[in-house]
Image 1 (cartoon, helix red, strand yellow):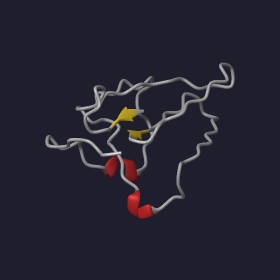
Image 2 (cartoon, rainbow, N blue to C red):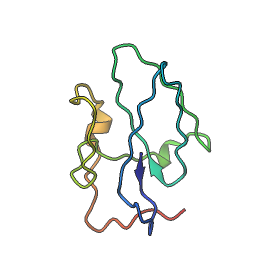
Image 3 (tube, rainbow, N blue to C red):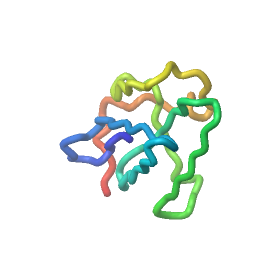
Image 4 (cartoon, one colour):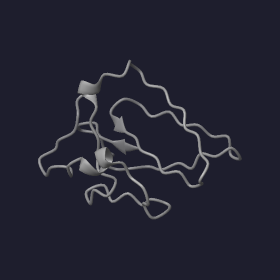
Length: 99
């Protein structure tokens, strides 16, 4: 998860959590944070809920390899959708989102 909240002391910082059937963890990601995931096995299921119904006009994304974020993925990135590859890098003048 990446903090995108304007004025936050952790703005543009990321935090990763490993979720598995063995550790039985789940994670709550509040509004103002981006989320992404990488499966660590060949057989994985992901279920997630949002605070509002899906609306394509509000969908945005971050590049998994954006140097501003410098996310340390657990494995080399192998497969990524064309849509996820097409997101632009974070602009130098990006000040965050207002909640």
